[in-house]
Length: 210
Image 1: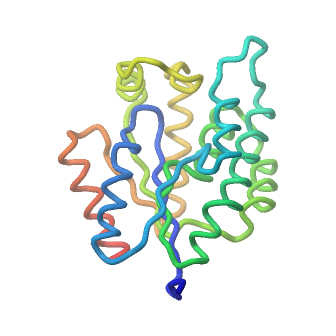
Image 2: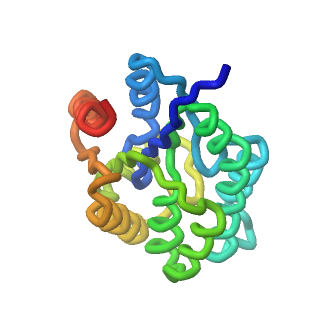
Image 3: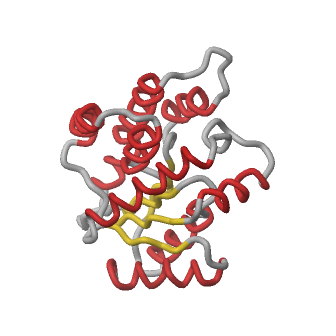
């Protein structure tokens, strides 16, 4: 019998090499330890169709991908993700932990690529409606450090190949959105060591979701 408890959407955000993906499992384990059923997912991706679009978005095409094409692909993936993964899970009373979500579009395609706010807002309204995460952890790190971490992993995608000036615009957009929505967002100092960052994440979960 499906749970009658309301599912909650928790998102992790941050620039390349901020370490957010490394902490998705920590958030999932914390929730499961408290009796929650959890769906772990990511963007772009999270459903078969959305994962196929992810491959298109991250590939390095010889003709390039202009800013508006990138934006529309991101929201196409998000629409499939919401319809096939996120909304069904929330309706069943499950918590959803998502590696990137709507804030990424405002940071990367908005501040990074220069897409105007009204276009982002129109797509957000169309695809998300009134859905918002209950908690967004924003992993903040200086672009030089983050890009060095990302590139040290080996293969890089189009975003990890961006210059520091692009990633600084992304970083400032994340910080601005976090400061504008303090009831939803928690900034995590991701320049610290792994144990310190984990403690910050656990503290935020205890303070905001316990």
